[in-house]
Image (cartoon, rainbow, N blue to C red; front, side, top):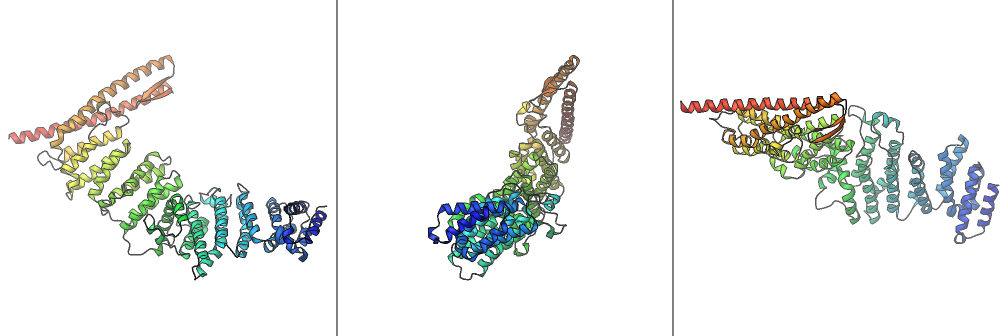
Length: 592
């Protein structure tokens, strides 16, 4: 019945001229063809398409049958011989139909599915799509751009596999699609290379390929995790995809040094105004991804000029590192850590000039590391952030270290980070006293820095529990200074500032400790009374209420706080004892 209906429509259209075909005829042909496919009459449909008499009809209306054929193939319900007929029919339609109409029809089909069917239809239609575009005589660049944009938009919906197992399983087909997409794009890249005239159309084609490459650097490559360097690179489809994309860029006249060395400069390397708008949205992420792929993964790094100094490479990578660290996805900001570490390891200790800190990113990047150290939920990444920050500190010259310490003490707002910085200050003072004297960690410069360390932010009202790490580090630094620097020598300048330190730090700390201990002792007494009554109640710790905590747990928390206060008090007592001993000894010498 379906075949007879289709033949009837074909017979009626055979006597019409092309311009007389009506929209109604298109719809009827599609419905009849759909029924033929659904009822399994694919052989008869193939005969009708192959019939020379129907050539004009197929050319103008046949593209409507591509959708039913493709959907039937995706259902995967056919026997092998019927499936071969489906593919043969699809190939015939691609060969015979109007390429302009067919292009739009194929792209509509690619946009239809969701989930795992996205990769299935892309893998099915990439070859037909490539064939159709190559048949187009006019506006080829526009067609390539439209196809690549559609394909990328669909690929960007697929989840990016992270582990080796996920990459090998490739459940959503992203890795297969990336490989197939490279093969799809190659002929158009070759067209750009082979066209020696640099026609306007060729420039447009180059521009479309450039856009696709930059989009691919952002998605999926920005979030992609790559297999370890020790494992064979050939087994990593996403790394192979990255390598091919960078290769395309070089082939069309945008080798990576030209891309990343020019990024951020006033003079742009692209020619079209349209791409200026794209730059703000896509380019920063794409360039950061490219820098990571080259410097950390080593893709095409042999293109890099050998004369470039490590500090110069770090300078132009800092902007890319900043972009990566600003992202919240662990797979992205971890690349920022790797890229920074890679750049720092090339540099000698204490050789990175302080003038670099006048560049904004050289201060924002360590602040980004602090965020990773304090906010990242993954312990290994927090530790990596700490290690990279220490590495960064080690590479700076003395004035650079001094400047960075001041910056982080003013901006980190985290007791643990401040304690880490104070420990580094102590290390620098120790080196200055033992080895090479430098003015940044002795005398007036050091005193200015100590003003940020040896004080309580809110005086006696400061939350000592919240700031315990910082306070302990500050006391340990002060104890070290008192032991190592005699009042007579006063190399650090400590002894001339002792009265100010006592007023701003030691006395308020005494008062704060007394107030805090009294508060927590009262809370312990209250908690013990509640325990007797077997009730639950809320507890205030560090100015935050912790509700409905069992009394025995409350007591543990409270005793832990008291232990912290006792620890601070014991170090404070030792510092004051050392100060008294030193000052007494000096006064006796003066009298003698």
